[in-house]
Every structure is written in C-alpha cells, then in structure tokens.
Image 1: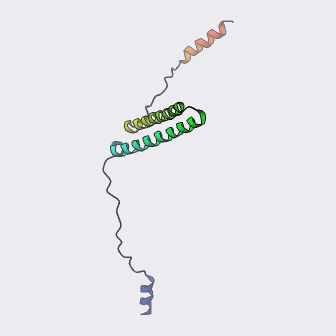
Image 2: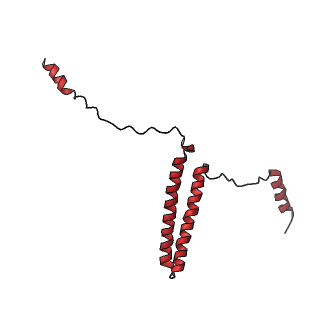
Image 3: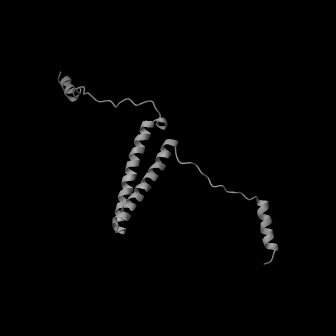
Length: 125
C-alpha cells in the first residue's frame, strides 16, 4: 500500500488547460503573389531610404555649405537619391529581382588566334 502512495506522489498532477492563442491562419497566397506584403515592404523601404538620405543631405549641407539655398539643395539631392534607390528596390520586389544581364563575350576560335599569332611573328617591326 505504501508503494501506491509513493508512485502517486512521484507523478505530477496534470497541468490545467491553459487557453493558448493559436497563430492566425495564413492566407494560402504564395509570397511571390502576395501584393499586401510587397506593398508593406515597399512603403517601409521607401520611408526609410528617403528619411536617411535626406538626413545625410542635411548633415552634408550643414558641414559643407554656408548659404541656406545650397543647404536645402543638398537636402533635396539626398531625398532624390533616396527616392531613386527606393524606386529601384521596389521595382525589384514587384518584378521578382534584378534583370540578369550577362556581358556579351565573343569567343575567338583557336584557328583564328593561331593566324593572328603567326602574322605577328612573320611581320618584323
């Protein structure tokens, strides 16, 4: 009888059922076609790029220029750089990545390279 109380005391009581929050159901949209996520990322990226580059332009204007006009011009230039960078990144987000441009390299056949080598060796300079 003592053994039954020992085993009963050794096992912990069952934990009370806690109300756990399950994550919201995911939409069945693949990330490639999820326009909401792309727009969110694009807006976040645009705001950050424009703000940081405008701040960099303002700092550069304070350090380098004395005239208020040139200071505002440097802020405007920084904002323009930020808008351009954000536009480029957003176009990559929506189109699926940067274009795959490969350099056009012409291959020279080995017979042609031998003729060129012979012509240089036969013609004295």
